[in-house]
Length: 206
Image (cartoon, rainbow, N blue to C red; front, side, top):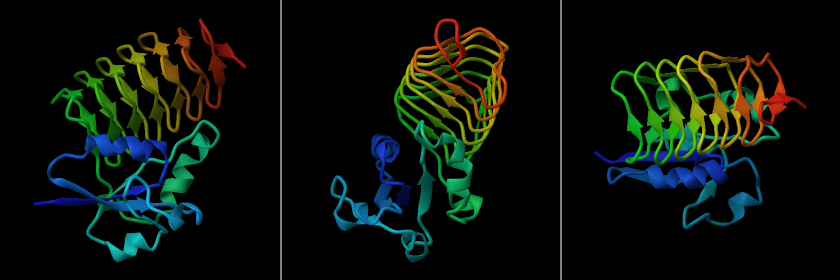
């Protein structure tokens, strides 16, 4: 049976999520709050306002809003869609390697080449960009965004609504507090407190 989808918003993460659709998936269109985006198709797909969520009640929703300027608002933005958890879907690229001994929540997007090792627990509303490796027993809390080519060592805990910049590495058994931002290419060797903004090798506060 064909699974129908709506992607929110019409941005970079949603565009890249197209590569995760399989033969049994069909994108109906994008949902976006910006009126200027609704005026023309995106990659051949229509862009609607939030009314599409009611027009197509059968469609699964992938809500992948995320940017470095607004990542601390992800939870608020996603919750504003006001849809039940059962409507959210999860998309996993066919080249991703996901251990059967891991847990993946709803509204998660795992891109090409992602590796999820045994014991990993991904909460809900998680985005993992291409070629990132999450080693054993990593815990990722809700609304966290993980960039491409990251390596997260065993036992790491990423708090709620964390932004982990592409190319970053985190030493084993470290804890990154909620709402923390790790800059591009950082090497994290210490725990990071809630709301921290860090970067560098080793990562330090900015």
